[in-house]
Image 1 (cartoon, rainbow, N blue to C red):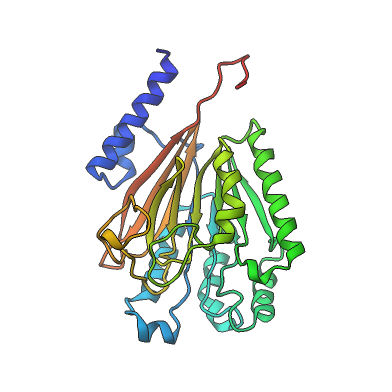
Image 2 (image 1 turned 60 degrees about the vertical axis):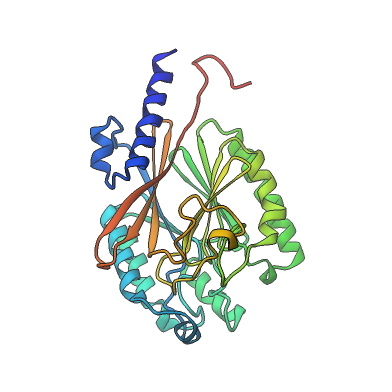
Length: 332
């Protein structure tokens, strides 16, 4: 067995041990031989940071949601990632300029710190008046293509898709799918990209009692995701709970815990999909993701807010190692 293979095996075994023991911080990773190098790249993923609407407060339990969102924004800023990606529902009502205040301040602080911000719209950006709501979104992010777009962060590519299909014309949906297929194919053949993460707002899988799955995503966008060797992770929001599913050997995370009203999940025998995170927790605490890449390794950590609404548990979820061919040989 080669030295490189032994190193990869050691990293995987170490990570499995970390997950099994639920070791909550990166210091333990460093002590175990997995070191965050100075050239480590990091991306934070957040979703559903909207303040709960009145109807949600009446039908579901309010739980310090504004305080949770503030804590998440502060933690993300403190981590100083290379980039932040938002999977939609930044605010409760896209047409209300006042509701954008906290998000605008957060994004400004990111930009002041040299951190890029890449959002994709959720359903709340279109709520009440889709034209007026999305105009508020595009005025803030004129560089965002509403069909979808891709961002590079070192050897990681993030492909973002607008899953509000009813807000797109048939021609726009056709153009979007064609772009998506070509983009995945291009990254698959790009030697500079080792990992591809696909993200959208509406989940292809969820056990939420409040929102359903996106058939459009499942039928049209997952086939190419499954076929791609480099596509390792599919992220979505909309359901305000953390969920982890594995389908056809691929990992799907729902990360809609950015501050919106917490949604109950179907658990136990009532669950439609097997949740690798928990089969018993009906509600999950607020959270976001911290994804790091170094060398040929990609790690995914869940940052989950504790009940004190101040500190976070750093919970390792996944690690991927990209197998590369020896020098002078191709993957064929």
